[in-house]
Amino acid sequence: MVVTWTEAVVVSHTPATPDIAVIDLAPGEGAEFPAYTAGAHVDVLTASGLVRQYSLCGPPETGRYRLAVLNEPQSRGGSREMHALRVSDRLRISAPRNRFPLVTAQRHLLFAGGIGITPILAMLRQLEYEGGDFTLHYCARSRDRAAFVTELQGNPRVALHFDDEEPGQRLDVARDLGDPRPDTAVYVCGPGGFMDHVLGEAEALGWPPQSLHKERFAKQDPAGAPDTAGSDGGFTVRLASTGAEYAVPEGRGVLDVLLENGIDTPYSCQLGICGECVVKVLAGDPDHRDDVLTDGERAEGMFAICTSRATTPVLELDL
Image 1 (tube, rainbow, N blue to C red):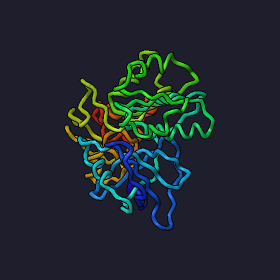
Image 2: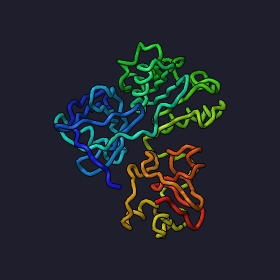
Image 3: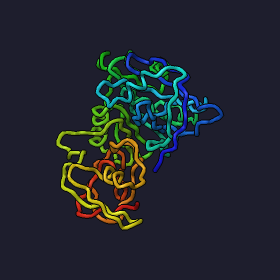
Image 4: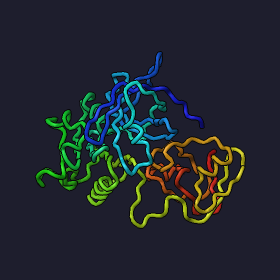
């Protein structure tokens, strides 16, 4: 699937912390950006041709899109290009997509770690506008490394937790999350270690998976996990629309093979975290290696072709 790109102009580029830049984008002449909901992200096509995903942190009513980008030295290069942008520079972005929306609930608990505040901040603003019942727990290494802390401090619904301040104010998941409540939705976003900690503690406290909503910015790589690059044996993928079959060898992914054979299929992050490449499995057993699908979606046959594989010789896809 060909992505429709929209031209965007950098109208503001300011440091929020020593390593986080806040970038405001306006649409090109005569255009308007599509509306979006809290938790949405856009793909950004950089000057070098990299495609990266960044959450929209609002506020949406300005007609502009706001991104907050961490300059990550160990990244694949996108963050460095974004930090190098200047006012009046132009780039291309996709329409917003949302795999991390607010759900219907009487109460919302928001947990953000570091740059994970970006989608969570949009949720906070939406909940404030709607009069929703929520609490935000925002964790960072230090106050000067926390983006948007100035506008969040003093908010009675926001608890700030910093590693280098007195121990009593640090996040305590058992205390700050508490026992499961059927009327409560929990949202978690941030670095992998932070997310694993919060979600692991939530599971230990008895919170059911359907109450826990997450978005990762990088592929989860827990110790002992299977190789997400696809080191297992090969299998065959069959396309239901044509009956065509393609061998997916050891060390190659379904998406790679389909693209090499000219198959028009949507994709974006290629890490199993954005959900753009998800299709339905019609036959065969998938080996899920993404970090975006819920247990319910997997049970319904959803499958991320960029990272996941098969445990059966043939996997038939709704393509």
